[in-house]
Image (cartoon, rainbow, N blue to C red; front, top):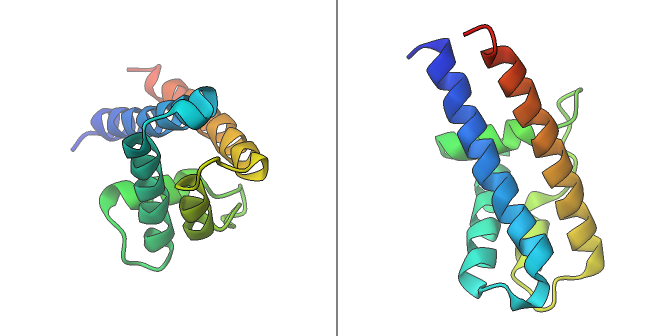
Length: 117
């Protein structure tokens, strides 16, 4: 697989994750439960990847959600459980907003790496 297709695939996954988080943030309590369940599933995939048991997507999400030193920014398993609550607490919405900002930054980095192609 070429570097370009790897970067493109990673950017696409990051975008889908970010858009889902944005949808949850913008919709609030009116969001369909299937969408919050999807986000919770993605967060759990990333949490499982930290333990070495994740899917390809989970590994990517995990790497996108770490700080520059490689440390975890939040307890994703706990956040996944909270995301499924109604209403989602403001503290969890704030964490999701920070994750969305981080994903936006990572997507910009992917785009920068792909620009020579």
